[in-house]
Image: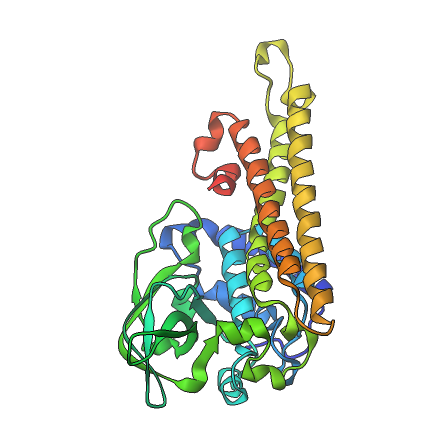
Length: 364
């Protein structure tokens, strides 16, 4: 069931604040299962989270990413894995707007919130040009987060002609039932994302279901003539980079809160003196530095999102220099979040070695 009316960024944030503790209560079980439960994905859909970047003509909201990232970050404060899966589901629905209109109509036929997973890196797989489309002879597509609940998948490939020359790179849209799961998701962090591989053998994909990365970057994808709104004119690569930053920001924000709360109850290094750690100047400096790093990250991400939004409404394409700068802002923001969490974790004592400790999960 989909949310039927347009959703504002404020409503999304409010709903995320309510769902975060619910998802958080399931996070331990999801980590053991190495996937999110279907009830979590169903609640994402019912909340309207999956349609934020979908064209309004299909019931979507056409929001800009700068308005959605705070929602993803807020959800990550309850369950980082759920936030990660949500973020990739969201941007994959945005990518459908680049495909021919008939394909868009097929994907959104049952509502604006399909679950589309992806392995967008084209370097590990090939598809051969054949009459009417493409043939994937042997495909193995890794890191398909949230794969268990898929309706569709986008599979990154290099397209080969009869002479084995690469003539294009992009992603092929494939029905979820046409791909098999290969469970290779054994990792130390974000286990609950269920980012396993999807495989296929001798699979034909119609030509219309090809998302060419070159055309997408140039703004010449066939679907854009049916979706002239500025959100679909956003720079292709910067959007895909910025999209992954919301969970990291939320993890760092929650780590700050968890560390601060621990200071109020934790004794000092020499409990016999009656000192408490909240009176320690060293702890104050540590916390202040971590908080400044998270503030810097938040500001950098907001700036990157605003630059992408503003450029999408201007004539022409975003310059390569500006695109590179937004990607640098995003990656630097994640660097600041990483260092903030790392410093809090390393200065929290032996208790953080407990796998259930919130800072242990944040550090992973």
